[in-house]
Image (cartoon, rainbow, N blue to C red):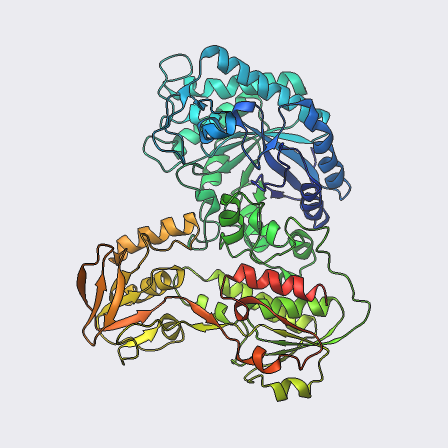
Length: 628
């Protein structure tokens, strides 16, 4: 199989299927857009090979009924010159009983079922093992019939094959358990049967977790041996990933993990085998990808979230338009948080993901004069899209730089990727000819002077000041004040509010040597963070000595302490030289109220409508401008 470049869109759980697990137009359009953008190889959603592995949102290939829909994706991708593969899997113990008719999930051994309490899988019998191996073979036959160019066997992330490979989940005493040779036998027999169905010349790939980072889990040394065995068994390419779905989604590394941090895993595997190796995880810059290839650390680079954020990344890189690439921030808000809620894949910075057909940006029938107030993420996206539609766009920003709250969001540790987004939008304003004015307070008079036909208000939000006794004392400031550079006097700091902002500022202050205690009224902190980012945050809190009080409601702040009550109503004192408020935000509505009824067409977006996330602001900015 010859691929036009070494960029791979890896298999991701997009949830673009219907309730029966069949392909939808949404999926076809998504993958076609990535192919049009220049990617070399697309590997579509993981597809389940058997009914005991089904769950909502997961693509199916366990019946000939699904061949026609899968072939529609293949045709759409081939139309743009890319190759296409499909990943086959059985998730084993990862599926809750409610999704498989109340039956007990299966695995290599008896293991806890993630997301349940007290429910365990059962060990597969030999006959059941043979049945599942045949299901893989039949799924491979269907994939080849649907005209896929390659098939990838999912042996990573704690799926069923991974459950057999790992001592963490395989405690069998028969021929499928014990040393690595025996634990590999399940995969080996699957590959043999798949090869018998698709023929000797059909390209086969396998994805492995080179490290599970779990007690008794797969280690890099074992992974290297597994890769050798895969090559010997007839696999043509090894796709190196890491982690397991049920415990740690490390393959969805947040921005706290440096770019390319796990490339060393693929590099180590590559040294052991003679077939191509794919590397992945936190590679969002094509220049980094190129250096990985030039240094011989891998043969292909998988860019998953990055291609969701900007499907044209390959073409822009090929043409040297690096400043135009909209890089993934690894915020994991849309791709992780949203899909865990059972919704289809979304991207914070790309509102068109999963809606490519309806979200095409076309020239407007009539050019209008559009004034955007506010240079935060929502206002910048609105200005970008309005300019692409051919409108004359003015953007007014009260600060001395663009970015809005993203400027503050880029201050705490491990948030450096936010700066790339600010840089991208700033470059786009210049490239698209948006007339940007900084350091200007947008008054009704200033807006009317520009004679706009349309006004987009993206004036953002202000920090919420709660009704707490002593909240206006000199030793009380907001988390936003800290991010703007305000001095925090004293050593002992109480962070009032343990959401995303409060936790990030707590870490920032702890890094400066402050003794920080987070006081949160809810049962847990960082509840508004995605699960992967939160995991790393809590680990850093332990390392940096950040203390946490939950179910704690602050009643009073004095110059020396914070008084709080627990859920039983008992009062407690916390010694604190300063209190930092991070209890939310309120929409800035002053300008919208002053302009009401005075502008022919006015739109209110982002936090100025209701304080929420960057994703909400960007998406509202996109959809608003795409209909002007």
